[in-house]
Image (spheres, rainbow, N blue to C red):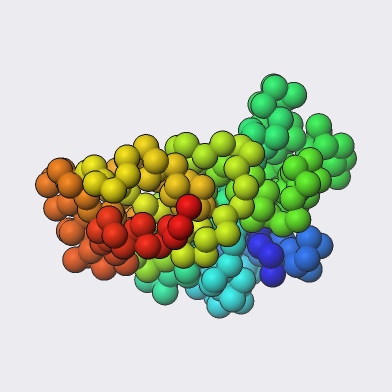
Length: 290
């Protein structure tokens, strides 16, 4: 699969109350399958949420609980790119449900079609809600807050984006818009976000050792300038992160390295975050000859 677009609906205001999930799997830019599952959240429904998605306790009486549904769909998540509209919400629900039932977390990267739409149509729409986008894209059959219907709009946003940017894949589209994937696995959960420095027209990387990696540079290099080093990292396809957090793949330790940040990075490493420490020679070797 190229990716899977998902959408959750919840029974109440808590992310542990998923009552519906829609999934649309895409292969070679074509929908491979589309399905929806009702979920018994084993929590109370709020009147407000019912008024939004119209799913009631009666509707989920015969539905499986999340562990039962997860057993059917988890294969579509592990090692997959997941897209959702306002992905922080939907992946937050997924994480909350996994933790609620003490299930094994998947290993995935995720993107956000809200961020894609905001880049593609910055002024053409009054907002970038799915209902507004579906109307703009003339998707007359869209039913807002129907999980499957919403997931299909996510796919159409990606399809339109690929045509508008002449991208051959969702990965290429995401990179061309200057957005980095979020990550969810056993040790990390961090959001999808815009790159700090990369320009919208930046080419895809030809450096497989650094492409899509998250790098934090601590201190000042001796063999180049800091600005030149950061520019080369960006050009290589890496994401330059300013802060120490769980998104990091590499921490580059240079001269005059801030000791507090180095201690924070070392603490994350002891907690199981799979980050690696590099010195100046090692990062320059990875970057290769200019």
